[in-house]
Length: 288
Image (tube, rainbow, N blue to C red; front, side):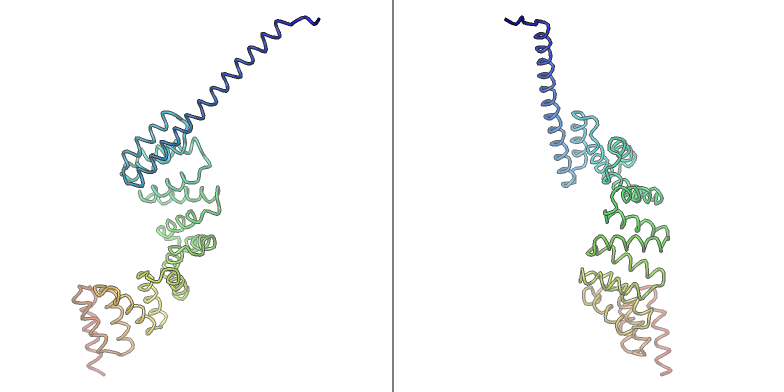
């Protein structure tokens, strides 16, 4: 008969105790993690309801349970940003990035905050971090382009808007803002193309009609410009700039009667250039 090794049995028993304790700890960790996530879901719901202080409190509850919860810091940062607590928002974003340095949403949100604060170079740096981590993130290309436009880095802005469009061909704002940037670069034909694409995607985009009308005017497509300004006037009879621009285009076509009618309407709507334009058109009509 084989003799029992009592020491071995004791070791086995001790291992069993250790394994059971570890099992219990694993269950506890999972439950705590689930509870922290539930608080984060509640926080996001509060943000959707614009109850930002409640969202911050919910994030704090999540962090009490799981102190190294990067997403909780990020959502808290968003809530603080939305109530104007920018210093604490930046601290929360910084903490979130320390915990989860590859989380693109944190860089994106911090980039938005830097942009709102007027710190365009830092905003560009954050959007660039997103692009490095996730090159397919069209919002990052678009946002960096927008900041570059404000810094008058127009060629770089066009390149980034173009990348955003390549990633998302239905990105209306990217088409529009690329057109706007091209307009400021005096690339009026390129602007017309982009505003036209914008209108294919969003036919009621009045700013696209307004800017396409001006671009058409600058390339000498006066009747097309008038058509765009007319669409705006039909949608909003108080659009003083559209009445003025249409009046100027009519004047260039020597349609003085129509020009004066439009410019007087613009004057009644307090357009600053209307009075001087009326005088010029009246003089030109008198010489006709």
